[in-house]
View 1 (cartoon, rainbow, N blue to C red):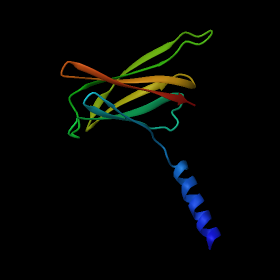
View 2 (view 1 turned 45 degrees about the horizontal axis):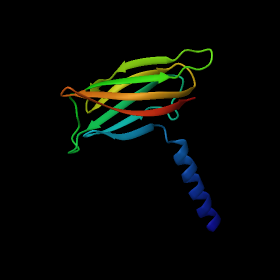
View 3 (view 1 turned 60 degrees about the vertical axis):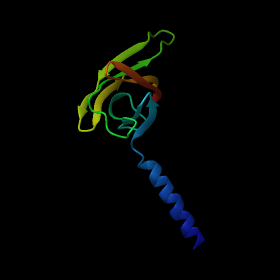
Amino acid sequence: MKRLALFTLIFVFVAGIAYAKDYEVRKKTGEFEVAVTIDKNPPITGDNNLAIQIKDASGKYVTDAKVIVDYSMPAMPGMPAMNYKADAELKGNEYKAKINLSMAGSWNVAVKLTKGGKTSSIKFTVDAK
């Protein structure tokens, strides 16, 4: 009986890892809570879709901001730095953007939101496979 319980526990744990499909980052910037979800975990070379949710201090969705995603890879020997930008478009309560990570490796991502003339941003790093 203990073996069956242990096997079941291990199976559930491994299955949970196998089905963890989204990559998510949550950060606070100024008065906003920002959640960025990437549709692949880990992000891949090529197209990756982002869903960005922004909430104000009261927990209400912010749907009147301008959102831009800047993503870059630092220069390496024999290769210049790569810098790209994607405008996010509001769909429902989320802003949607597509980024194309042109090669495997570490990418710096900055989500910049502008509302009421003020700009805030969150920064994080992803490793594309």
